[in-house]
Amino acid sequence: MTAEVAFKQYPVRTVVATGYTAGYESTGKTKDHPLYGITFSGLTVQRGILSTIAADPSVFPLGTVLYVPDYGYGIVMDTGGAIKGHKIDLYYETVDEVYNDWGKKSTDVYVIEEGDGSVSKKDLAYWEDQISSQALPAFNQK
Image 1 (tube, rainbow, N blue to C red):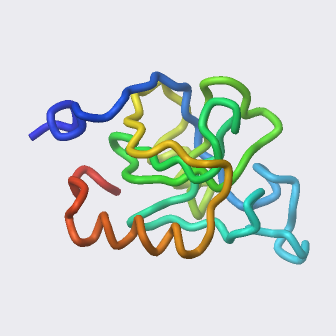
Image 2: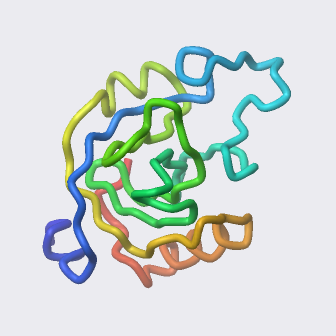
């Protein structure tokens, strides 16, 4: 089954997606900065069954859950100075992963649920449970 079939019930948006890290090259913060790895929402960046996405909150409000083919599920937890309009930033742990696994490309994303402008640890736990219990399709994730 392809993503197009599994996710046909969800709205599709075309975006330009880039990768980013918590590091200086992406955020201007070094590991000794008190806000290193902390997103606009106040939560720590993460890459796993549900990963951090940065987006323009006027397009994808905080808390929006997206499925990105070849990346997996993500939740909008962050914003960015260069992330305006239909652009998103996908969190990776290392610069090598950004370049080797993603780079920059135009892609369709599936809007699983639009956020309300906030995101909490409880929200993360809820969506991680939905994905791991297979209430949502779970495949094609890195």
